[in-house]
Image (cartoon, rainbow, N blue to C red; front, side, top):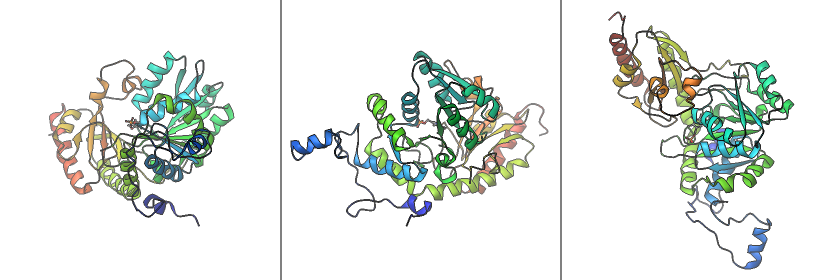
Length: 388
Ligand SMILES: *Cc1c(COP(=O)(O)O)cnc(C)c1O
């Protein structure tokens, strides 16, 4: 009998009795005799040798997230970016072209525009909603990189159609599923080859861990394991894996709460004249892939409503980057647009300065609405041309 998804989230299948796995805080693992060592080194068994390669606590997390995403195997990483970089580099080589959707996560964009170009890997950015443009761009490409919903503006795409186009073109497809998590969207079932996560966000869920993971077929993960993972060295630490396992047990409950609270807050915002636009996916999106919504979305404040005053007046929403934890957060794009350094995704993708990103945490939603109400009135009074 196979367990339901909700039970899989809670249950860890562990040897010898504990309900929580021990943290194998050991860099190496020793052998009883040379024969056993020889057997392990020649691939005859899966005993751990060294924690950069394999660690039993990390393995419990990898097996669990692989099952939750519907994949055969997973590889944990030190961060989401470590997972993304090691995955792309395992499937793209010098002279190759990558096709990537617009409004991708800003550091994924910089990885492509700064580092991959130096290695002779070109990236073309395409509107992920435009399947004709995607099909054209994919001719001769080796990899399709997806995000749905996208970062910052939260566009949703027809993931199944995108994955089909990649397969027809002979390109490996990769999707960042950090926002939806396997609770609300399982891209492998839609035909995508590899799912990557910033596990620093919802999978951790408590803003105390930076981690990442890649999930796919045994063969795809083997390629990452043999080509990039051991040499780039961005391994997931045993303690971080243990924290991620703790996060996963409540992931279903937390996502349900984020979904309900973001619905409450966005319904309230829809009636506010100070809010010109709400960027939050509707569940009736093209591919019908989303079964719920995370708490991260963005709003465009109306002309004359001051985004800086809005952010500074909020009390429960703390000013900060990242998202996916217990706490509500706010990030004004006016700040991101001014971030130093070349290849600013927010500038290059045309994100407007009136845009503010909100992360709805696990607080009482009525308290959040009350906080937003005070801040939005203050921001409108402060702005030019307000009615008081
Ligand atoms: C944060 C984030 C990442 C990067 O993950 P890290 O764990 O910070 O390296 C990748 N994708 C998305 C959508 C993110 O929000």
